[in-house]
Length: 116
Image 1 (cartoon, rainbow, N blue to C red):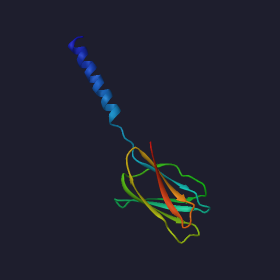
Image 2 (image 1 turned 90 degrees about the vertical axis):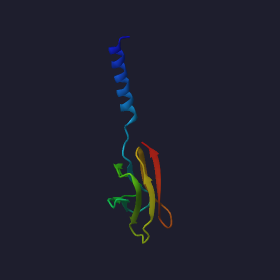
Image 3 (image 1 turned 90 degrees about the horizontal axis):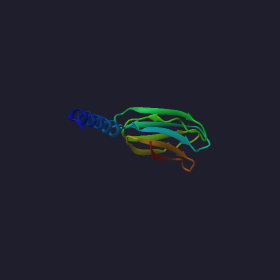
Image 4 (image 1 turned 30 degrees about the vertical axis):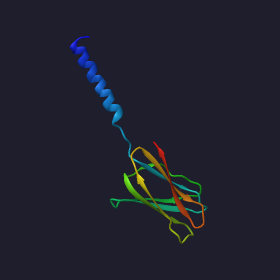
């Protein structure tokens, strides 16, 4: 094999390895409401930014949306409830998070995580 062919093969191999090992997706979150009444959920991140997801109907799930990496506090305001449950999680790249408004007394939140 000539030096030129070896150099070309090495460059192609390096490019393929570089492209396959460096991709990562931002974390994503959605809300799932198990309760019999509507829920509003706020996601608050360590940098102070918030995402508000309102009017999540009974047995409904919202679409995933990209969120910030790092600590996140989810707080739910539930129709006809005086309690506003919270849950915290550390959002990491390449992960999907589902904040579940649990049908319990008193109401609670659960965070489920899955790989993208």
